[in-house]
Image (cartoon, rainbow, N blue to C red):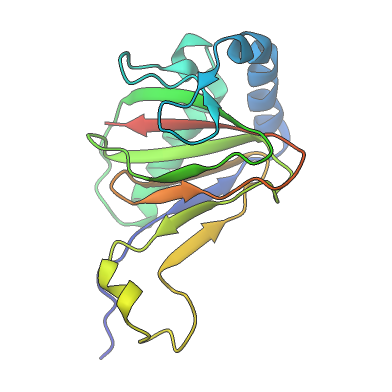
Length: 192
């Protein structure tokens, strides 16, 4: 009997219609203020962000992005349900905007001291740098089995407007290089 072990669940959902319009409108009305609060990345990569190591930022709360907040919690319930995992009420502990212009990227990183992390894509052309999740099994980098020449050590998701991804906070991820002239605007968040 074949058994898959070391499963890593990633939840993906693309909002549409009225919900998408509501989320996008909430963000659009705050975008000028958000841009004024951007600063260079504290991580040494090339995005501008509202993240701050010294103070926990919670832009979803601060800018009253209530529809997005509600949809994050709806997504968490769906995530738990699809895993047949007992639902646990989590808190939105921090959230921040990232603006990634041409040549922008983010290095491999995790979100320590959180349970679930996520991202929502407000603006993207879908070719401006996907999010790449690295396999938690580091030994896969030294073995060809069972991939037979295919790279199965990472999975990349193309960003889509209205897409929300949830993943375990310990899962290493990066944002691939934006080679386009378009900027990608996303909101990252952590739940504890």
